Image (cartoon, rainbow, N blue to C red; front, side, top):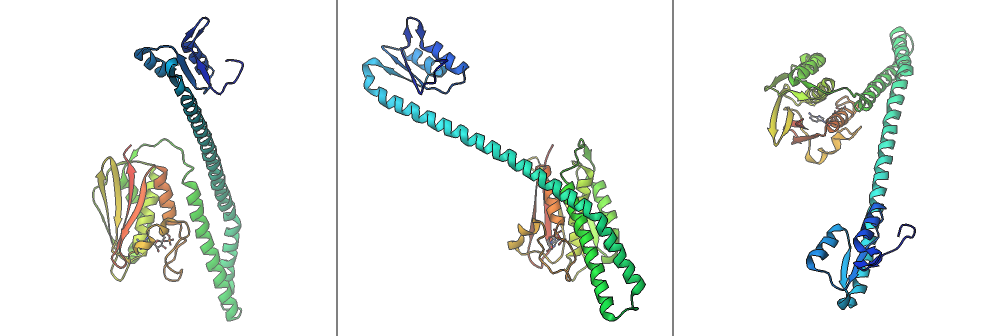
Length: 324
Ligand code: ADP
């Protein structure tokens, strides 16, 4: 048995120089998936159960030998299924590995590309701005228009590249996570948004928020994206934004509620996809990356992000994080 590969072993329970159970041990120690059927004159029920427990596939009593072909067929079929299952699992494991590698490569590519594009773009941007400043009104009106388009394009590209860089950086920080104050992260985000807050007159309130185990920069960015959008996508009324938390089944949810233009239900999924926007650039500025970044951050911690809204009736964006 150690030197030959058998499809199946039919063995007596005990013969001189052979015991069925030892044969089983040999098969097992060699990691061989060879079915073993005991064909025996008599086998007490207890012993039969013991043999099956130890790994015998089946047993056939000699006075019921007509059952043997069926037992063999079944054992071989089961073996084939096990083999197929093993192959499918190995195949899946290989695919998961390849996917992880190709994802890491893509992320690296996005990071390097956006990082390295910043420098030449800064050059284009500063020189078009210089052109605009120095030659405004000194060439003809077409030239003024063209320079303004170039300045605007360079600015937009800069924002896009900064957002792309922020997106690809989400997976990069690997420091040890500590519990942090969500309220401090919210205050940081509001500080970063102070200009748009004062320009819009937005009223921002919040309930007490629980501490969370998350990178503080990530939570700040989440609040900044969600509160920033809540201000940007306001309706005719002054933006009123409330941040609150709920807890259910060991899952903490933080929500940002606004009284803005709202979102129709058919777009609830789409807005979290990179570059997906529901409005033209001249209506609302933006790159369409903010919610994709938010989703990536939340999913990195095993959480979920979603929106509840109705067109014209404000939106509530919520993200849940599993309790650590
Ligand atoms: P951006 O704001 O740069 O377009 P986001 O990824 O942050 O990109 O948002 C994607 C889209 O989701 C936005 O273009 C907008 O249409 C919609 N959206 C996001 N937040 C809100 C909100 N609070 N109210 C209404 N619409 C929103």
